[in-house]
Image: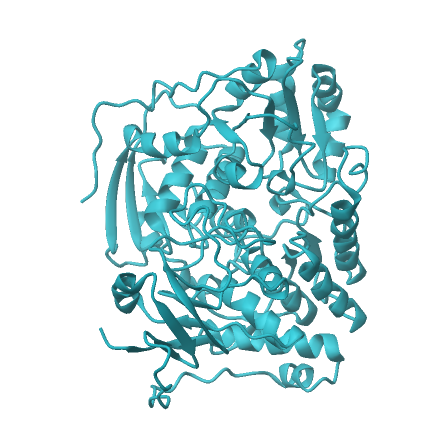
Length: 582
C-alpha cells in the first residue's frame, strides 16, 4: 500500500494522530458522547474508546441527522478527532466540520478515500497518520504532494436570486446560509438548486453549547425562514421540565434553543413525527426534512422528496428556500438497488415491523432496499412508522420500498428503475432472531421503566394504549412514560385517552422524545427499561445507561403492570431454518 493515499477533500484542514479504524458506520448522535468523545453505542465495536485526537476512519455515518451537531459540539469543546477518513462521502459528518469552519473559523479535515483504500487501511490501525489537503499520509513526516489533475466536476448553476443571496444583498444570515447550501450542493455533486415548499428542523436538539451558539448567531444576523417550517422534538418538555426534575443547567439552554428557532419563524410543533401534523407533505412535494425517521417516512410512505438532511443544513435551506437538486429529490435517485424477499409468518405481532426495519437497515447500509413478499401484510401507518425509525437507525439510506405497500413500488421493475439489483437477500422470520437478541440487552427480568413513543405516539397508538391500560394500574416499582407531540396530545385528551392513561399511572411528556431523556425521568438506580421501539432499544444502553427489554406493545403494558418481563422470543420468531441470501 502506498504511503500516500489520495482522496476527495470534503472539509479542509490538516490533522494527525493515531489511526482508529472500524468497518462499521457510526452515528455520532447516540453513538458518541458529545462532551467526552467516548463511543457510547454499545452495539458498535469501538464502544468505550475515546475518539478525541485520533484520526477516525469510519466507512460512513449512519443513523441520526444530529450527527452534524454532535460533531460541532466535539469540535468547539476541544475533544474532536484530529481528522475523519471515510470510505463514502458522508454529508452529515462533513457539514459539522463545514459549520465549524465557516461560522466559527475552526477546521477539522474530512477526507473520502473510497472503499478499496479504506479496506486496506485497516492494517495500519494503531499507527500515527496525517490528513492534509486531499491526502492521507501513512508517514506523517512525508511532504504533502501537489494535487493531481482531476476530472472536471460539473459546475453548479445558480440563479440570479441565488447569486444575490451569496453577495449578501439580503443580509448576512441568508449569505452564510447560501454559502453553506452551495458548499454542500457541491459535495452532493448537484448541478443546480431547487425550490422547496416546507422544512422540518432537527437542529433544535440540544447537544451542548455549540448548538445554541450556532442558532444564536443566526438570530443575531436577523435570520428568518422563508418557507413553512416545523420543529423537531427539542430536548425538554418546555412546560414541565422543572416539575419533572430536570436540572436547570440542561433545561434552560435546551428550552432556549427551541425559542431561538421559533424566533427565526419556525412554528411550535416540537415533534419527531411531523408526518402526523396537518402540514404533512403531499406525494411528489419537494421538501427539506431532517430527523432520520421523518426523512425515511416522508420519502417512503408519503412519497414526498427530501434528502437525509443533516442538522444545520436544514435551517440554512429553510432560510434561503433552496436545496441541492440531487439524490432522492430526483426520480433516478429513488430507485432501489437491494432486493429483499421476505417470507412472512402469519402469526406476527407488532414487534415484527421495527425488528424487520432494524435488520433491513443493517443489510442495506447506504443502499435503498425493495422488500417483496409483504403486499398482503397490510401494515398500518403505525407499523410503517416503527419500521421507518428502526431502518433509519441502522441505515444511511434515505428511504425504502415495500412492494404493494409504499406508493413508488407498485411492482418490482418500477421500484428498481428497470435495473437488476446489486444485492439480493431472502429472509424468513427466523433470520431476524440475531437482531432481536441484539435489541434485548437486559439480563434480568425486572423492568423499572416502560418507555413508549420513539418516534412520538400517534393518536391511534394512544388509543390502543388506553385500551390496554383500561381498568388496570401500573406496578409501584415500575413507571410507564409516554412521549407525544402537543397536537396529538390535545386530540387524545379530547378522545378521553389521556384520562385513562393517567388513571393507570402513566406520565405523558410532550415536546421531547426518548433519545433526549435521562434521569430522573429514567428512574435513578434502575437497571432495565422496556420499549416497543427498535430505535430506542438500540440507543438506550448508550444514552440512558440502561439495559433493554424489547417487545410488542401489549407485552410492554404487561411489564408495566407486573414490573417484570421474561424476554422470551415470540413464537413466530423462533424458526428452525433460515433462507439466507443468494
